[in-house]
Structure formats: C-alpha cells, structure tokens
Length: 376
Image (cartoon, rainbow, N blue to C red):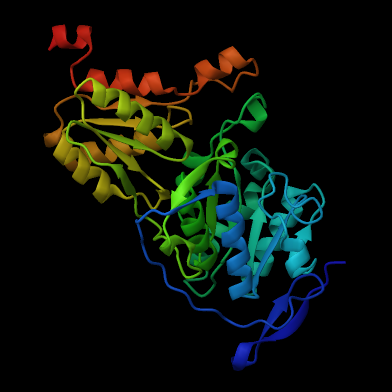
C-alpha cells in the first residue's frame, strides 16, 4: 500500500525514493527568507497556516502532508482544508492512528530527499513517536558527518487548550528545545504562522512547529508583503512586539498576547514594558533578549510550561551569564503550575499563567509592589 519507487529529480535526472503511489515528477525549488513588518489585511492563524502549506506544496512537488484526518476530514482543526482536492491523495496522506508508524515513514521519506510535513493531532501524541523524532530525525545529520539532511516538519497544537485534561495539555517547547539537531518554532500571530511555517518547510533540518489550538481562530493584521508567496521569516530571530524601557517581558505562542495585555495595564500605571515574541525556541535569540535587558535592567519570562528546566529558566541563565551586571532586580519567571493539567475549569485556570500574574511580576521587579518597595 505504501510502496516505494524511484523517480528522477528535475533536470539533474537524479533518482529519489518516492512514498505512496509517487509524487509526480519532482523538481527542486529555491526560496529565500525575508523579514517584513508593515500591516494591512486581517487573517486568522488557521488561514495563515493553510495558505503557507498550499503555497509551499505548489512551489515544490517534494512537499507532502501526512497525519491523522489531514485529507478526507480536512484536518482535525481544518488546517489542511482543500489540500486533498487540490493535490490528491498521493501528496495528502491520511494515516492510521499510529504516530510511531507514520512518523517513521515520514523520516524515511526525508532521508530520500522528500519534504514531509507530519501533523500530530496534539503534540502530546508525539511521545508515541519520540524515537523517530529524536534518535532518527534530530541526530542523523550529525551522525552522518553532515552527509544526510532530514528536511521534515513536525507540526500540530501544543500546550493547554480548554478542558481537555492532563494528557492533552502538555507544553513541549522545553522538551524539544533541549535537543541538538532540532529547530523549534512557536508562532503567535498570523504573520508568525505563515512566515515561520514556510521557513520550516524550506529548511534542510528537522523542525518542530508548535502551534496553539486556541489561536487558530484568532485574526491578526498581516502585511501585503507577508501575503507574497516568497515571504518567510528567519529562524532564530525574535520580534519586539512592543518597545519599552522599564522591564523586558519575554513570551511565546499564546502567552505573547497575554504579555501585550499586561503591558497595556502596566502602561496605565506608569510602567513602560518591552514585549519580546520569541518565535524561535531553538535556536534562541539570546542577543535580542540580552540587548533588551541591558536597556530595561529587568526581566520577566512567561510560558505555559512547567517551571523546572523550562524555556524561562534557559532565558534566565543566558541573562545571568551575559548581562548580570545590568540587572536591577531579581528575574521573575511566570510558568504553568508544577502539576499535571487539571480537568476542572476553575483549577485549569489556576494552573495556566494569566494576565494578572504577569502584571504582578512586572510590578515586583519594578518595585511597585508594596511589600517589595518596603523591602527595597
């Protein structure tokens, strides 16, 4: 059923192994990543991801999709809507419910020069395929002395949603961010989603692409440049969403929105916060973070993940190593509670960072909290 055959690649007429019933004639496509910023139209994150997949599949016949319900059902979250009709079942592959199986097939296809985009219905289920992601995809380039590239994207919703319980709410940013050989991206806005997914698909290395279920339906302004088919964002570069001078707040994915809301509240109290959208977890844009801290002299990190060995902990270590002399207050980390995600709605809210938590932390590092001010 999943036979592997040999075909020619472009004008070079070199052979590659092709998955399924074959992917038509394969031709290489060359693209470059550029950064843009001007705003214009509105687009949902769902549509941004869908359009990025569509354009990359159109530009490069080596790109194909696979995962549970990505085809006939058009994706559990409709990210792949319309792609089966447009590209056919040889490039949009519905798989059985076996993450270990289809992830292994995807990695094998990447070994032979194809560009799979593997969807996990939730990144919690990626644990079923962890051996293929870490021991096969992430390590092969190093173990082959650079002779073997693994151009594969693992994408899907990550972190807490709403009322889906502990086994569907885990944030894996720190897990995958700790592994050499992987690149780990976490978009916030529609421009992030579109530009970073394009960059991930074009990248020669395995990329873990962490989306957020609660952001899929949110609309964001996108620039005219971002709607261009050649648009993509650089991997490893953070974005300063809001400039400020009093405190640096770092966040990624859904927490960027919370950080921006907190910054608005803080502004009303005379605190001018700088908000950094990390975008890339690995590589981490340490230079942008440290430059901001050297300006504001204070740092608050925000993430949904657990506090121990988290992304915020890594950021804190980087700032202590490179900018310790610039800090005027202890670093504050805002994280998810150190427990499996509760199912009850009231407890779930307590387990996930809220806007008010960020506000209180920023006030503490600025010595606006009554107890902290007295101690100072």
